[in-house]
Length: 170
Image (cartoon, rainbow, N blue to C red):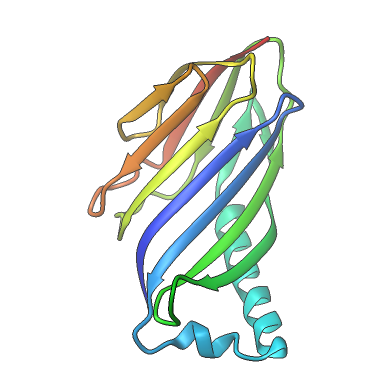
């Protein structure tokens, strides 16, 4: 099973909850994942294993919001297939919460640097009335309507191990 593409969506609410939905798409010519989730029992076991593995990676990150470290947790995982058993995807929902303030807020993430094995895209959506100010994700990004940020990462790039974003909350 080889990763083909990834997509992440960060949706931030005005109460400071960050909802991260991550979907990884794979090419699986041997249909390994399809067979691993073939029965209700094996599906539950595989989903638990995927959740535990993702939680391990999430736990290795250091997330800081306005100077306070917060912990993220994987709250949901699912597996599906795009048109056939050789094209699986794995979907994760990860939550964390920080204290936002009226005015400038700062999100920071420290993580292990790595070489990117596949193209991926990350989209951030800030609440209505909030405004993106500046960021360094280690990759180029675009801002739409002052509150939607889109980052595209190319296969073969190296992640920087640190990123931040500042935004204005009303």
